[in-house]
Length: 536
Ligand SMILES: Cc1ncc(C[n+]2csc(CCOP(=O)(O)OP(=O)(O)O)c2C)c(N)n1
Image (cartoon, rainbow, N blue to C red; front, side):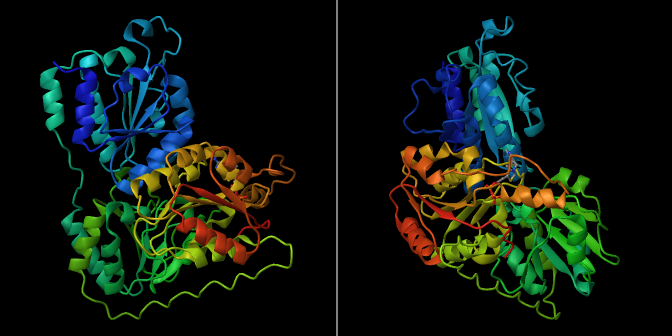
């Protein structure tokens, strides 16, 4: 008779889940005993980065990814990452060790009291099985929950004495044989109505969201925009964890502003706004205004029922985003509307006077000059987010990962996960020096597993975006917004990542080109940048 451990690892094999991201403790060792050779364990040094690595891996591979945490303190450290993964719709199986069952009632040391409560708001399912024999079933259930739309983390707490217990052969056999498919077709009548509305619209607009890329709807989105001659905005960068439409495409207008009034203003003059694969909308900050301009109708297509239910305006159709796009392409005729006007190129980012640091825009222009055709950007550089988008104009699917939640600690870790999932594409992770600190320990993982990620650190010695928010919120005199003397290159070297300090645009481009071309482990490039919000 097989053990709970053997049955569970068979389950992982059945789901193709042979990579485990973790940080182990004594309560997890029984799961890791006799670790099978056909599995890999990727060690992260702190739980926030363990979840971030798995988030990047899950998104880039499209598969449910296993994160293993250390009882209550491990789950506690991981919460910020779970918040991010939920917003990113990253399908994660999150397991945590627990005290042995005879110790739980007396709350012996390291007992995860109320284990299912801690991660509750950030997971789709949270469970501690009542019997050891139920562990494979609970884990299978969490895998299914994670994989069904909206995808996201699901949690199981496992007492450490369960792993050697005998599995129930009937449960194990049936659990192994199950598969669950979650691709639900949107209402065909609603799509037909929408196709007619689109046909009759005078000046319709498409807003492309992250789930176009995540669902595999990229080509269908392009085909729809071209057939219907739709101008396309990207959903606001705040919630655009992935890019939903090629940003160098002539129909692409740019990125919607994230505040209510300004966003509504950008929709002005469009009688129909089709929002696909995005919430309506990931607003931030709160700058009130009219939600929609007069005379504008909005229709959202999302696979996430909660996203449809909470939208403050418009109609919604719930169903698989790629399937909806493919149906719409079939249902609509080619339009004779005018071609959208291609947007202007950003102005040339001037080289500053001698000895002055580059602007964030000039740094992103240097990155654009070095950019490899199949590059993937992982971004966590708040004051240069728009500069990166506007300069790189990424135009291939699966080329951009950003945390839709606003929680820091994603960048370095996610870049590690993305590179593991996409070993043949160059990954470049662009970081503010402040943001880098939340996930800094993931540099060790990048070095140890020799992952050829290029890290670019923009060093402005401050929390620039918070200074910008302070002005917006009329907050004067706030402390804690300066970062004097923080040297990420020095820290990187200590973690085993070779690091170079550069200045000036040409040197930055050359160094980035060399770093990106090098395939032998990670490299970090640090460049001083001037204080400012870099919007183009
Ligand atoms: C976990 C977490 N803690 C704090 C914040 C608040 N926060 C948002 S941006 C930011 C500063 C980022 O600084 P840096 O990476 O240097 O970028 P810059 O704004 O200078 O471009 C902070 C602290 C956050 N978003 N997430």
